[in-house]
Image (cartoon, rainbow, N blue to C red):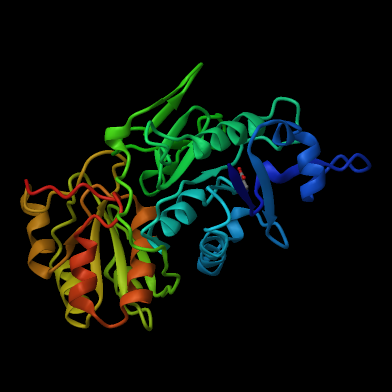
Amino acid sequence: MKILLIFTGGTISMVRNPETGALRPADTQTFRKFVPELEAGEAQIDMLPFDPLIDSSDVNPDNWAKMARAVYDHYDQYDAFVVLHGTDTMSYSASALSFMLDNLTKPVVFTGSQLPVGVLRSDAKENLLTAIEIAAALDENGQAMVPEVCVFFENKLFRANRTTKQNAEHFEAFASHNYPALAKAGVHINYRPHLILKRATGAPLRLRVNTDRHVAVLKLFPGITEELVNSVLSTPGLRGVVLETYGSGNAPSYDWLYRQLKAAIDRGIIIVNKTQCSTGSVEMGRYEVSLPLLKAGVLSGYDITTEALLAKMMYLFGEYGDDTPEIRRLLQTSICGEITVQNF
Ligand code: ASP
């Protein structure tokens, strides 16, 4: 078994400088000294560090492409991949890779930690070693147990594109509000195979890393003004908007809001309705206040996370260019388990 650790940075990579006491990113040799277990198991574990290591707040779509390419370039040499990543934007990166690695049949497990590896009480080792064990796990047919992009943190394994960072303090930093955990780690690791994506059939891995950043998040709030909405929707080059609405996808019933959204959609901008609630789905038409959105041509985001929707839009605009009908269709389709399409 050969596993590649793609080491991008984040808190997990940090050790204390003995002279200054300040935290700084460790090189791979220093990191391995803090996790001697990496040498002890049966698997060969190699590390591929980013140069420089980065805080995940600095991660952008070029970095997503670099991570996806690292998997692609080493796909035949390794059985599984573990990505060490800062927690702040892990859900965005992991979601993006779920789209960029088309026909994936090997595990890609993201993990990180709330405390640096070089700190006594750190959760780094436990997260890393369990992520490696999950990446290496095989089913009764000798096939990868979890052949999809996922996030392991604290004691749960989640589908990557369903996750959200929910806590800046607790070790349980991630949640998957709309899809159950794929596995839970206690004394044993309990997998739930019926929740795990079925392996792609035969087709070779395809790297699809083109992105287009002309997207925006527009969050509604009581008292939002037409000027603000207009200024977002008039952003030069804008192609897609995540419209964060209330409850089951509701919006204030101002005429100007309908007009602004309709005009933007008529100009070719794609607007997707994503509820501000962390759990549950958009259901336009359930309340009168969401009917104008439907009429204007706003699409339903169903139960998608904002992280996955942004990554999906950037990916679709980058990979499908001007094919707006196809992009609209794919936004309403589950590509790799990111939404539950429901016809209420
Ligand atoms: N700022 C850090 C990062 O996201 C936080 C962490 O890793 O937990 O890179």
